[in-house]
Length: 373
Image (cartoon, rainbow, N blue to C red; front, top):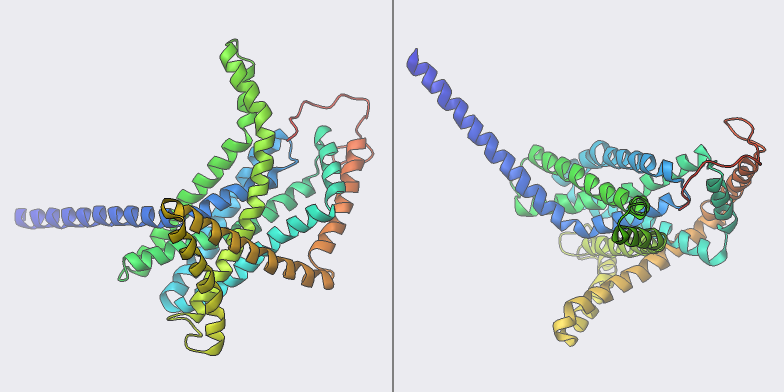
């Protein structure tokens, strides 16, 4: 009996060691995969705050929470199973899927550039700003904002998860499908917490500044006042960076995905069409290498800048073509502009106190204090 008990304890100890080793493997693989996708994480962090523009202070954290939950749902329920199954049984299809993702990001970025250049969104922005001052930004606008952010996040999340999956497959080709799924789940949770934690910190930094400005310490007041003055400019800059990131990442996804389809091991390897698809990234990479060698110690930065700029140009061109094509069929920018004008009229009416879900609003009544970002 004693021998059987000791044998059982040995088996339990062996299982415990195996479980601990598995946890270590998952942690190490998740760390490597997260590091490989760091570039897209930065883009995700830059893109998200622009969706909070025009939102009252009281609604910023709830909106971020909704977007974060949607992002985690995107990663765990939709992207993770599809990525793991495709990586296991049909890895050649991943670049094809990413092409559609890159085109969508390029469209989003080009659409924003088009709206700024043509002034299509000016009336909607003015009405939304007026509504925020009155504390009456519509729930419909918030719902549309959250839905748009989650749609964009889906593409960035897919890129993050695919990059992570490629790292897992490359570093451990013999890993089981379950190990890959666990690693991707860990990456999904870690990156979501990181991205939306940083976003929450950014958008609430002016509140921190206001709190410091009310402190008795003169130094704290100076720091607080500096934060309050700086944050609107910081958020505006982040919005510009976010649009640029959409174009850059979208163009880069398109270039790399076409390269993989037409290159070694791709679906169209060795065909004339494959050579055509393979060529653009080859050319850009060649220019990147030339700049790298020409600039010496600054070559890495110069090469990266060349690759980034050309990827953004590709994204802008492809996105502009998609915007124009959708506009011919009354889809996309034209439809959204019409919806924006309708939403602007509704927001302006609410701010004037003529309509509202919560009853009549007295224009003479002082609005509740709400910080306008």
